[in-house]
Length: 154
Image (cartoon, rainbow, N blue to C red; front, side):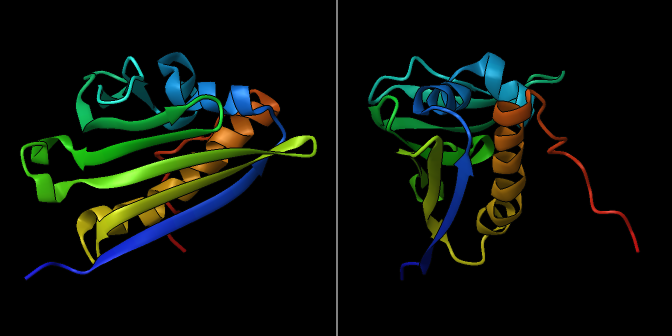
């Protein structure tokens, strides 16, 4: 019996260029400034990709492969918790589509092949909005946000 799959889509508009948005996703020294993690790969189709915590301890938290790459328009990666790297059923897929939009960029992040109701599905629905808001903030103001912030108790 296969598990029900779902997709999560987030669209944002960033006052930047496609090249800068693509670099922010793929260059570790930029990603750490808005994500608190570094995306590490040689960015070739079939290559490994790792999501490494920028602060000590520098643990690998997510892993995957580069599925498709067409700078500065599109990046597709597979995505799984590092602890589940050996389980093919644990992988989902993330697509970054970057489109010029007048003096901005429309960034669409599609995270699909997620198991409905899973910890990963629940986590990314909370994580993508703050990460992508932080990316937007960094590229527009030079300063990312604290993606590890927690809601204050009422």
